[in-house]
Length: 314
Image 1 (cartoon, one colour):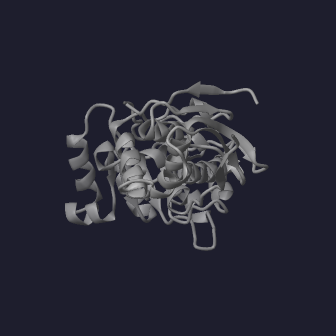
Image 2: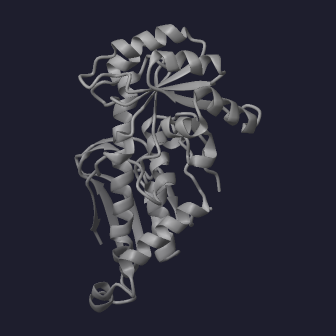
Image 3: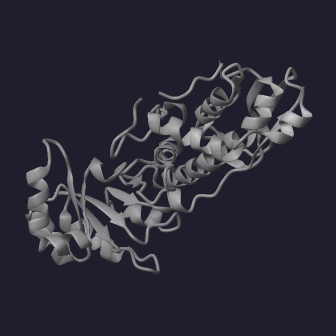
C-alpha cells in the first residue's frame, strides 16, 4: 500500500480554532497543535504505563525491532492519526509512523490498514493501547459528525457541536467534529457570549442581559441569547441579539411546526439556532425549516468508538 505520509512523529505544538470555525472535511480540518493536546497525551500515557510496562519489559528483548499495522475493523470515518503519531513520539521518538489512509476518509470496516509503525518492539507495544484509545474515540465522534453533515447537505442549515464533551478532551473532540464535517460552537466560556435561561433570570430579563453583553463585547463579537417562546424571540430581536437559540422549539415527537413559525417570524433578520430535540433522526425536518444552525450534543456526548486493532507483522 502506498504511504499517505511518513514521519518520525513529533509531539504537538499551536493553533486551536475558535467558535463557529469553518467546517471542512478530512485532511483539510487542521489538527489543533496546542499545549493542551500534548498534556492530554502525556496524562493518558502516565495513566496507562504507570511505573513501566512490566509485561513487555519481561518478555521482549530491548533490542528487538518490529513492524506493526493498525487495522480499521468497523465502518466509519478515521480520525486521530496525528494523535497516534504524537503518542509514539512521546513513548519513543525513534519510532516511525506511516499513514496509509487519509485523515477524515471513510473506511468500510474490512480491516483496511490505516497506519504502519516501525521501531522498537517494546515501544510499539507500550504505546499501543493509548494510541488506539484516542483513535477509536475520535473516529467515533467524526463518524457521528459525518452522518449529521450528510443529513443536512444541500440545505442552509449547519450542524454545531456543544460543550457537552469529555472533561479534558474537548480540544480533540471538537477537532473530530470538524473532521466529520460539522462546525464548532464555543470552545469554552471565554470564547463567546451565549446568554441562557439562568443568566436571564440573574440579569433581570432578556433585554438587560443582552445590553450587558453588548457593552462588554468587542467589535465583531457575536452575542447569542436563548429564548423559549415567540414573545421572548420578539424581545431578543428588538434588543439587538446577533443570534438567537430557540430552546426546545422541536417537539418531543419531532414536530417542527413551532420551529418553522419562529423561523418565519424572524424572516432572516437574525441568525437562529435550534437546540433541544435535535437528533440525527430529526435533523432532516429541522433543516427543511430553513433554520441557520442546529446544535447536536450527541456528536460528542453520545458518540461511540470505532473498532481498531494493532497487529505486529514482523
